Each structure stands twice: as structure tokens, then as C-alpha cells.
Image (cartoon, rainbow, N blue to C red; front, side):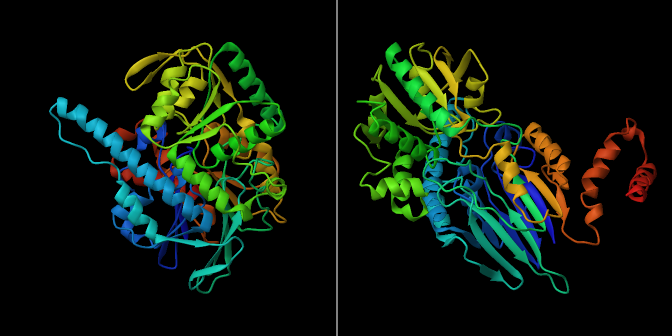
Length: 505
């Protein structure tokens, strides 16, 4: 039994890990690389044969966890995608939207390539391919133990990150061996975020694959940042500008609507116009409204009192491109929420183009910005950024409210892993930049956990007889590369180096 890491290992996007056991190949997530990760690694090729994959266990619908499932299907995967029912519904609308974006990007590139006399490129996948792949999905309920095949059971627990998001428990029995329990954290939610319940605590596991997105940072308390958001809105309106919020259409947008609804109901904000410029966000909100059984107590209380937290006067969902373009004629007094959350694609780029250069306006980031993304560049203080090939000055006020993030911070991550009644044999860290991973690894090591930071291409053997010699391949490469004269060594000398390393292990 072994784990192989092909995405969100030493990085944040492209979540993708393979568990190979009992002649079956199980994929944990199949996400899209974004920002720097996409430029360095690309999305079009898998480092494994999709036809060999038997199951995909999908932790949640966000595109960096689900976004390559249509490509997996396109390249021959015909197994099942197992997830919660809410994740299944959200994934369908997200992947179709993603297919549309890939089609549009390919069309734009091909117009440019035609002028250069170059051949056309195909989209990563199409809307049709996304629709077809959705038939492979099977939705199950939280806390329901399912046997996928002999010796392999799974159970999904609420991760508190997004509607339907899951921590996945895997119970594995190999022949003549004791049962092994692996827990895959998926993305763990921030505590006390709107609508969604807090992450489920887990009693035990032999091994934990754990995200570390904010492994080196602490969030401000949500209530403080909610108040800060209101202050930003009022200040911006006094200056005569608009508030632009780049937001993930699924999850973060609904939480921001919820927060704004509370302030409008309490008369702290009056007469505001909130544009949610995303057909995907509109569909996602419909799915949120359908699954109120997954809401936390506070949200259910609001509904039971006769209000709906995702609807209020002044809230406008746009559908067509024409409706979106009309928003850009609004010069002041508008809150504009649009995707994508990292500003890499979608309608948010148009709103940034029309507001980023205006000192009267404000840009408010409410989610993680991966390296190499437009959002990260703006957040890190770039004075000019390129949008649709045009240089745009950054004159608007820039704010970052990580307390509104759906990700647990360092303390939240620590509290979750510390809730295990018995320490796992090892914690495998994924889904984080190296700085975040190293910081969290050091913290856990100090707390007495055995920890390993996983990198792209790493192989981890879950076998008691060889668990102390796992990752030998990666260490051999590292060891040999540390020898300056490697290029002048003959094969016999290289073999002696490898023997030396093995004897030390």
C-alpha cells in the first residue's frame, strides 16, 4: 500500500494524491493547478494513466480540488467519483462553468495564434466534456460508512470549509494485515464562519494527510473583520467609489452575502446595491438554499425567524455578459462581488480594469491568493498590473481580510490535529506553500508529532516493514545531487554512492 503525491504537494493548488492498495488505484481529489503552479506544471498531462484509476474521492467542489475531473474522463477514466450530495451538485455547475472558461480562453488564444500563422489549440476540456463527466459522480451522506470494494471502506465527515466539504476517513484491510485507517483532511474550515458548521473532530487515525494553507498565519477574529468590511464600504462610498470583492463563486460569495445581510438587517448598512456578477454564484446560491439541513445553528435560527440570510433588498444577481457590462457604468456606491477569487479568469478582471486605477475605489480580498496569480500581485503591492494585455495602474485602496477566509488558520489546524485522542503514526503535510508547511511542521514536531512534508512526486509506503525507508528514491536523488562532481562520475561510482546511502538508512 502506498501514497503518491501529484498536486498540492509543496504548493497550494492542483490537489491530487493516489492511494494504491489491493490492486486498486484511488485518487484523492483531482484539482486544477492555478497561478504559478499552472505555469510551472501545466494542467494538460497527468503523470499517471487515467484509465488505471478506479475511484476519485472528492473532498469538495472548489476547482483546485475538482477542476481536472473532466480531463480525467476525457483521457479514459470511467470509474466513480464519490463525494457528498452537496459536493456533487456544486461540482456539476462549477465544472460546466470551468469548461466554458477553457473554451473561451482557447478561442481567445486561437484568434491570436491565427494572426501569427500558428495552429489552433484545443481547450483543456469543453462544457460537453464537463457535463458527461458529471454522470460519474455518486453522492453519499455525511457519517455514512460505505464499502467500495473488499477491504476498503470510506466515511465522509463535515470539514466546515464549504457546503458539502469533507474530511475523508479511509479504512483499509490488506490480506494478513491489520486494518489501517488514513484520514484525508481535504481543506479544513475556519471556525465560526457564516452558514457552515465548524470542522468535525476526528478521534483517531494511523496516518493523516493534512492541508497547511495557513500553516504559518493567524486570522483576525471574524467579527472584527466583518466590522472592518462595513467600515471599508462606508469609507469607499464617502470617497465616491465602488467596493470590488474578488470572491470564489462557490462558498465565499454566499458567506459574504450572509454577512452583508446581517448588517443591512441591523441598519448598519442602508440602501446599498450589491451586484453578484457570476452566473455560477447564482447557481451555487440556489444549491445553498436547497441544502439548509447543512447550515449551522445560527443560520437555521435566522431562517426559523422568517428571514433568509442569502436574500435581501438591493441584492442583484447578473446572468448575461450585457448585464455584467452595465455594472461598469456604475461609478460609485456599488458593492461588486465577482469571480474568480484569485482574479485569474472570469468577470472580476473586467471590474478590476474599471476600478483598480481609481483612487476612489477599494479592492477587498477575502480568500487565499496563490503565488503567480493576479490577486497575489495586487495584494503584494504591484503598482501596475496587466489585464487583458493592458497595463492598469493600481490606485485603489487594497485590503486583505483573511479572517473571512474559509480556511483554518495555524491555530485552527493545530486544534484539529490535537483533538485526536491518540497521535497518528505520522502526519503528511500537503496543500501549502513551503513556508507555511515548514512552519507548521516545526510546530507539530515541537508538540511531539511525527511529521513529513510531502513534495511533488513523493511516494509514501504504508507498510510497517519498510516505513522507515520510505521516500528512498527522493533522498537518493537529493543525496547524489549534493555531490558537486556528479557529472564526472561513472556508473560504478554512482552505485557505490547509492549503496552508501542504503547502508546508512
